[in-house]
Image 1 (tube, one colour):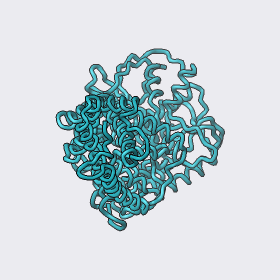
Image 2 (tube, one colour; image 1 turned 60 degrees about the vertical axis):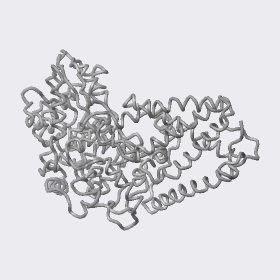
Image 3 (cartoon, helix red, strand yellow; image 1 turned 180 degrees about the horizontal axis):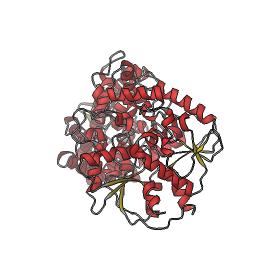
Image 4 (cartoon, helix red, strand yellow; image 1 turned 30 degrees about the vertical axis):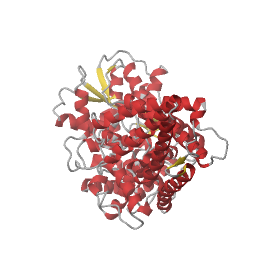
Length: 619
């Protein structure tokens, strides 16, 4: 079979034409890539190359194994095959390019090496089948927010041309058709070179950027951006926040998971990433991003549940970008009245209810025993109760039930009484970084005067802040009440006397489950109590937010909302046949779902109970 680059092509030596096309393609690609690097270099620095072994493990699972893509099995398999076809064909292209640009070096073409030729043929066939599935999904059975753009059509066409030309060339080679083989070889190489030149200018830049995005993901629990004065202009964001825009596949998975978007608010995590991409591609330093893509009503609609980030197959970081914008709005006073009142209350009284600190321990009244003051006597567990568990009458019964369970199990526990202040989790996610730091300082001072071994809390928001965002010098074990109660039951310290025989469903709190991976402990407790668990369609890591996070519990409904997330959630629970109880393990969930059940007219048929209340019935 004649050599494609030594045989004259279009009137000149093939390798000369190939060299010219390569210079043009690599030049266009490199100039655009250089511009992106130059823009990102103007952003705030951020370290994202620590813990290389952990990053490599994530890369192996999520890039090489396409793990998140398999949450939708069929398209996950198709994407997996397309990805590996891309890998082998990219290797084959560069192999061909090296041989083609250096015909004087005695190197074989990839199709002349048995194993590589076989791999290209196998992945070419499977890649085309997978491409057909992807095209059918996009154009015939598209899920919400997956668009039928011309750019996507062009990219699919280019990939198909790359695969078909390679397979046709292999067939021509086997058949001994030299002319067809050479034509297909050149079609393949020209298509790939054109693909390379076009890719940095297209929406599908994610094909190149996303593997780096996965490797450079944030490894901190909660993905909280470092303390800053906020970001409104390009140079005020971190380079990694801006890079998310370049890595975005615009697949719409984030929108399909976002409770704020699904409820009808103006927030679209997908559009946010698109606007970041536009910011990097078309603007420079000094251009104010807020008020345009980051409008106040959009920024404040976020619940910080991180469902968008958890579902994103390229590990983009939507929530940190919104928090950076919130910091700017807070500084400008652009915050809703209810949220401002809550922040004022936290500043003045140390709690969002605006009540005296002396009332924080009033929930202990009516208990048959005295709850210890951890400042005055040593305890094993210091219970950081949180605002809602302490002050809200709808939650105080749960707080007392938890206290009775701990007392029954012989646990040595105490509280800080009036010295406890709001943990600051929601305050921080509203963008009030300075107030958060003040609360940390005051709470650490109070905790420093107490004698305890471990920290206990019933509020997942408080749990997350204490566990992951307070600067403990020697480390502290922070435990949620469902974790501790599960340990006590399994150790025989809470002997259950009867089975409640109750059909229930369970709601996973975002800050307990998605943020901290605690899914099993509450379910083990329900099983131990004798409850029969029926899972909602959205449960576990795919759980749906109640709508309270990120300070939204203090705010009115966002403009455009047609159904609050909490209402959507109670309706989802009520649709389970025979289930009359929605079990929760978060004070804010309890409050949100009690209100939502009344609004939805379900309060008579759907009871909302904390896991601790159900467990106590089994004693």
